[in-house]
Image (cartoon, rainbow, N blue to C red; front, side, top):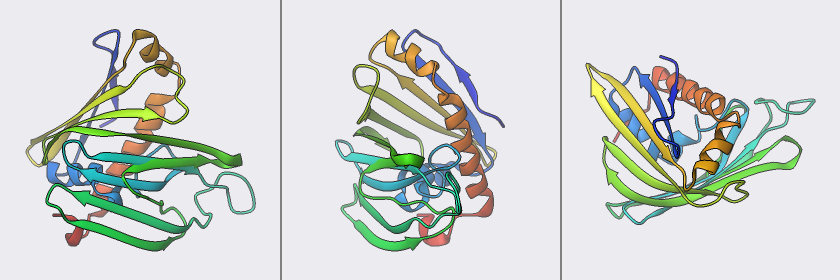
Length: 213
């Protein structure tokens, strides 16, 4: 199923997509750094930092970058170097590891996503979890380091399972109508759609048993 984008109010963008996988796996892909680094972002972009404290009031941070092509600019074949993944959960457990990422793998660091593009481009976003309902619902805030619109964005992800498939609905609510309109002028839908295509591929390939928990 392709991504469906709607605008039910002057401050909202709603993104809907169905995945051929149970919702526990889709939820895990949104909350486990080891999985997020394998799909998050538009084609050519990779998480180099992914830190998540998955609890109400816990913070996250993502940093992404577009890797340079082997022998040129902008390829997924370039080596990414050392990856740091950090995760904290409401259960009080912690996971912290480093590994070398090559090819199309992504890097993650902490509760933040940090992205960097070809030619030194970098994109970083962070926020706080407002609601965490395992396998069913996530509500979180979002602010980009170099944000071109005012205020804090509120994102609600809802995971509904039907006959082994998961319907994902993501509602993005901006602080102002002007901020929402500015985002609509960006290639946001394309980027989200490409990321969800990568997630779909990850789910088809299968998630290791040790991450399915």
